Amino acid sequence: MKYLLPILLILVACNKKSVPEMPYATPPWYDSAAIGDTLTILSWNVEHFVDTYDNPYINNRREDEVDSQLMQDRYLAFASVLEQVNADVVVLQEFESASFAKALAEEYFAELGYQQFEGHESVDWYMNVVVMSRVPLGTFYSYSPWYLPIEDQQEEDGSPSVQNLVNNRMWTVDVHAKKDYHFALTGLHLKAGRGTRNEAWRTGQINALRAQMHRFKAVNPDANLLVVGDLNCTPDSEEFKQLLGRSSDQVHFIDPLAGSGVFSHPADSVFWRIDHILADKAMLPELIEGSVGPFTPFQPDEMDAIADHLPMVAKFLLKDL
Image (tube, rainbow, N blue to C red; front, side, top):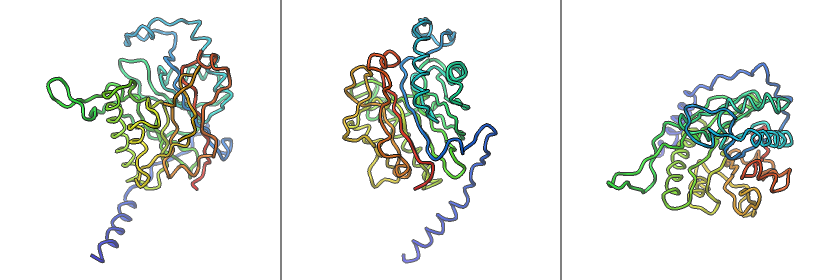
């Protein structure tokens, strides 16, 4: 037995060497020196944020019949918020498509310099999760095809309940802010709704995501992990605690606003927090203290006119600490 630990360590070291680093090339449009030493993340559920064109493949009144003037006003206010935050990476929930994000950026806030627009849109629904970035993005992991359990739930015939209805609203993308600093960013808009079945639905999604996070750590134990988005669960909920994990876990996320009484929804009269920015324990040291929280440049009714959630912002140092 005394030889077992050294053998295991050798095996782990050999296995780690067998995993090649992903190829990386700096895009010609990217100047890391212009970004500086910090990175700003914005996450925002922008509430049925759609373009003014009817997608013939999506059958929903809120996408089919759009008040063009109302949306034009929202576009302008939305752009004003983005300009004031000046975030390097923006994750948007309830947003129609990455193509729409690109078109908006070009027309309303081109000076912010967003270069990459990604998402995995549903084939039959119009509320998705997209990312805009002015720092390079790498591998994009979509969880859309997954069939997941609705934990401990059964159908009328006694068969286990399964789901994949909104898994397009979960993805992870590698963010290469510096050649020697990158992290895996997960954008989420988990299943909405109160009650046991919706909580079980979210738990199924969360368990699958945690399994994927463990896979990232198996490849690189020092991997930096960041989860942002509308989780549709509050910090005191069991599914939120399940996402965080235990402090002794290899994958353990920390809620920087725990116990703070900071709320994010609804925008005009906030009373709870279902919008979150969660760094894992490897990335937490880079989180700039006091930088996490809602961004509210306008009065509550004006914020609510843009979306019913407040935007959440966080800043990180771009070096491993």
